[in-house]
Image 1 (cartoon, rainbow, N blue to C red):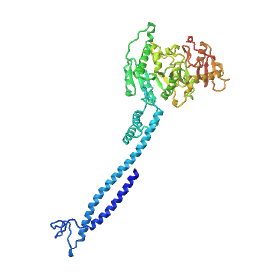
Image 2: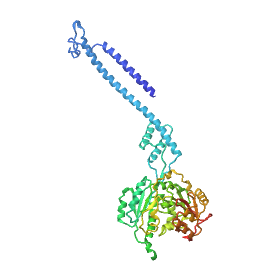
Image 3: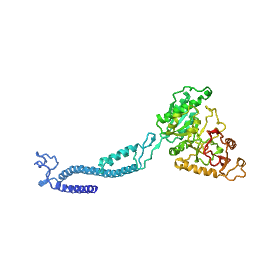
Image 4: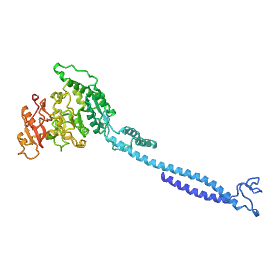
Length: 522
């Protein structure tokens, strides 16, 4: 079709040249317009309107005839000029049509790519999933339906598809998949220093849409409320409505704060899962500061938590995370633990649905550590903590803070966890490797570790305990926390506590063949 239009243009140009040549010959040989009267005028009446007079012998004045001929040629040239402009305009139209035709062909190919990609990779959209810039997907699917309806696509349909694709930022075949929203729930009360916690969360947060921060405030403390409100739309501020005292046994009046905290947790978690309809949450308190890779850590471990039914939480905290007890070169090292750590932890809605009906009236964290709640499940925890606490003042009156918590090392190196293979944390793989590593380590006495003269290399080495008292003695001497909750030592997995001692990896472990925790050890 384009070739025919080009031939037509050449033919038109040839006819134009031929026409003008014939016209000049015709005008040269024709008589003057009108009948020249006796006075030599062009019109009847003999007026010399054309300026032509006869010379001697009755011949026409040659100069006058040339002038007349030139004026007629000028008129005809104006006509031909208009004709040329029309031809040029048609030529531009044909060129545009040719370009549109090419774009339509490219567009059809692009749409077919999208159809093929979406057929092979359907994108599920659920309430708590953020799809980023995928508003385009909805429009593209509507356009694709028009294209797929028949094999003969009308020109205007293809153009409509192209316009929709362009309008929606030119969707290509490589569309990013949906990402789960992971809200951060900040439990607050009357600490204006919540600003320190919120500043770090907002500083390190990679996306406000993927990680909405919900600050749930109890206590009704006005100054703290003003601090939270100063962040505007960067956070969502909700307030626990029931500020009344809780009726408790006389001997528990001094624990009123613990009762209110448990009530607040229950209310706040119900808000996240039922009011905001989220599928997971990371809980932090108003006295926690987070590491640069805090969000990356939870993003990477969410699918592990979701896929392994023997896990029930992911924690950012290492109870034995003091600088001297961790390997600073192993920021990417993660473990399973039977001890519920808290202090920055992820919970799934399904787990909350299990826990909420029997949620305790106080001491919720120790309640979580009971076997009736844990049910043999574990948490994930890091070698180096992704949170630290700066809140010495609180309902616990600084318990463990001066002795342990203030010395916890906060990770400063960003680890790209989402790019790492974390499948080693799944129970079947982890347990086999863990048991082999622990019980193949040389068994040494605590004195060997303390003196170190006979030991060669960084370990690992194994120190064995067999009773509650022997565990506590060894733990104190090696610098790790010695308390047990429902028989489980802090950071313990299958009774094994894993840490560094003077640069050597140590496993404080029960005898081989361990089967279960003894709750009487608490």
